[in-house]
Image 1 (tube, one colour):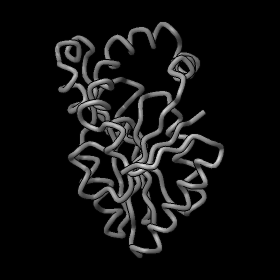
Image 2: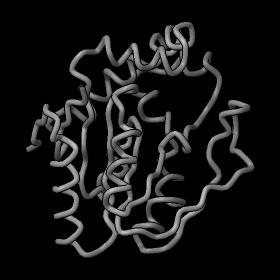
Image 3: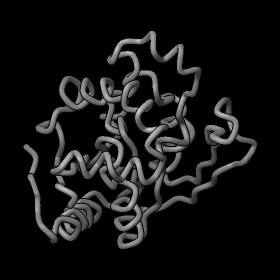
Image 4: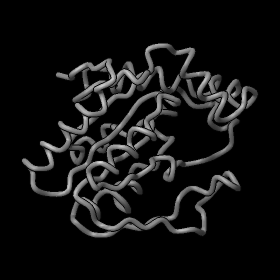
Length: 203
């Protein structure tokens, strides 16, 4: 059962729960922050990692890529399943770190919009791994996730305004038309609210 939170102490309660879990398990743990785009997951993930001596993994590094015309042919289920390379994020980042080893990977090349960047991201072993990104709590990763958090924004208009400010209105109009259906499917059929350990209402 999840614990729904909706006040200024949300972050402190999340950090307290994770800190307790770290002490109980006495091994590297994986916390996943999921939620619709624009809910502020990345800011929360950064604060958690900073407070507890953890490291962040951004699921967008493992974006699959591809042409918009090809994504438009896929169903909402297929989009949600195929957007992130789960095998690669698990094998190259999460499993080594959970074993107490460093990890390294080539992120998706967002500059060219295809393939992997020549740059390499490296992360040293840490007691806490914070996985940040939409679809980050997919079933393919459930057996290694120790604590899952759903980040919500009570007013959806605020969430969309954040995205427009970040990306531009023209870009987001096209994006919403393509990806809203995937998020709708994912957060209703794959990972509904009651599937999370904790729910944060991010104001």
